[in-house]
Amino acid sequence: MAEENAPATTVAAAVADQQQEKPVPDAAAGDQSKAEGNGKTVAEEPPKAEMKAVVLTGFGGLKSVKILKKPEPTLADGEVIIRVKACGLNFQDLMARQGAIESLPKAPFILGFECSGVIEQVGEGVEKFKIGDRVVALPEWRAWSELVAVPAKNVFAIPEGLNFVDAAALATNYIVAYVLLFELGAVKPGSSLILHSAGGGVGQAVAQLCKTIDVTVFGVASKSKHEALKGTIDHLLERGSDYAAEVRKVSPEGVDLFLDCVCGEECSRGYSLLKPMGKYILFGSSNIVTGETKSFFSAAKSWWQVDKISPLKLFDENKTLMGFNLRRLLFHQNQSEYVAKIFDKVIGLWKDGKVKPVIDSTWAFEDVGEAMQKMHDRKNIGKIVLDPSLEPKPKPATPVKGKSKNADKEKEKKEEDSSANGTSTPAEASSPTTKEKEKEKESS
Image 1: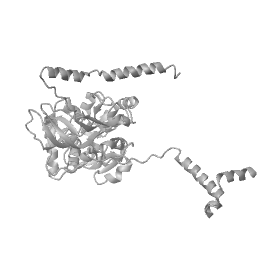
Image 2 (image 1 turned 180 degrees about the vertical axis):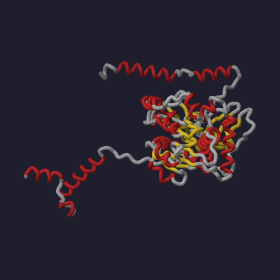
Image 3 (image 1 turned 135 degrees about the vertical axis):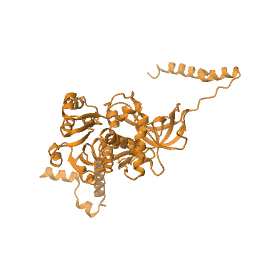
Image 4 (image 1 turned 30 degrees about the horizontal axis):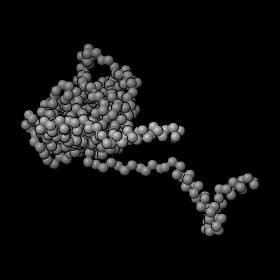
């Protein structure tokens, strides 16, 4: 076979030599020679600068979230580019990963709905910001990156003294909490309410805001969190239990407001616990997220468990049903000015020392999967924040397969060799080898 292939190999080598002697000019060289012939110089495009970002490569589990290098954003009219210092993790990010919310961009795309940082570039038509301003921003996506371009209408200045981590925690959570309580819920001193996910970022924001006007809070949370929440929640209720009787013991008439971010069977329970003139507000649907990937069964079950309430029933019982979705309010209903006014009120409360974000933990981009899992397992108390400047946690060393077996074999061999040479130590001499043990078993 080698002799049969020899002529072909010789021919191939000759062809290669000819190609080396007469190189074919590539397209770029041809274009350059044309440009030189016309008396013009063509400048080569510099490579695009890249940044680190958290990218969703496809809808599904944690493995679909990758840390990748992406091109830095380009500036458009009416936008600013922000150097990101901290990012907020919200439950809707988990739902987006699974493809469980509407109007999602096509994967791959950069995740993240909120961030804080410093403005590095200002686009045409932007008058209220300048380079170097410290801000918090609510882009529709792309917040989890080192740089992000955001329409100026969704960017808000933050005061000196407010660090970037706290600023990221204030944005979504406290805007949502303020709207739920004071804009929609219309709570006043002496009011009472039931709050789901009392240990989460929004839950802790609601609890703090209620303390400013003396509102009684019944907080639903996992039993493991109760000890940590005693100082912020008036009456703790166990998640997953039928807590209606416990509420009635304290407040026989029920409550003025029910804040639900779970959906499913909680809708019916919440409505039944309302006083006359009471309000039920849905601001999330975490019941849909039961596993690491999207479950159509969970979505269908959650929908099926919701009672269909007629407007006539609301009329007869003097009750109100409402919903609040900050993402849709900003990006589909164009209410940026309204949201900016709410954030100004939140900042006013922060300046007065009446609210302070509760930070559960801060994570590097590379550890975002672990951070997401912690939120999915409902183990956080307060806000989970991502910091692009943090170094990732060291990964535990993975043991090499078969290493322990090989080590045992080597040890046996050394023992046998030392016994044969008469150089064994007393301990080694007294301990029989595996072969000796096998011989003893055979003889017995």
